[in-house]
Length: 162
Image 1 (cartoon, rainbow, N blue to C red):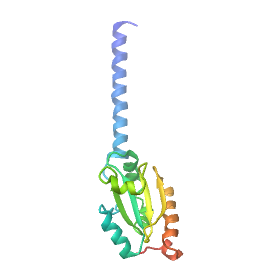
Image 2: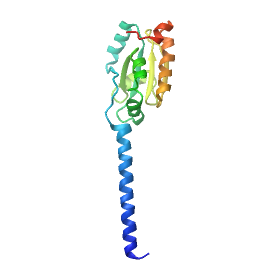
Image 3: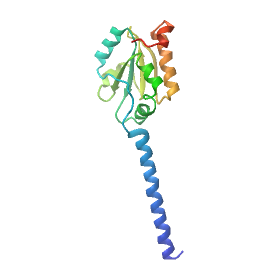
Image 4: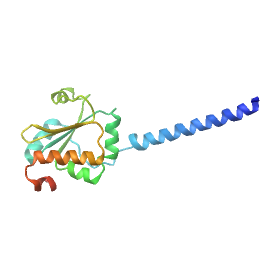
């Protein structure tokens, strides 16, 4: 290969890597970094959320997360905006807990992986938990199964408790 061919080949490889990097950066933005379109109103005050759950006589859905959790951001982008998920979440009092900001609270539940989800009954008992990235159908199933333990009446599991 002469020097002229090497320069042309090298230039093509540079363009290829710049293009590949651009595609990866765009994918990262689309699936992880873009702002959430979720309409779920996550509470941030644990005591207030527990009090609200007691007043509404409903379960407390706790989402343990951190700002640096990639799978948490993916759920925020691809799972929580789903209308069916939002409807199910709103039957509970949703509480978002950053494990870095509230390590004592997350320690009470023995959280060892994030994202983690706990459903707590009106009696203060954990009735269901899950951790890791959950797809839309998996998360819906988790919420429905937990609802059967929180609300013994099937009519409350299938209709909004508000």
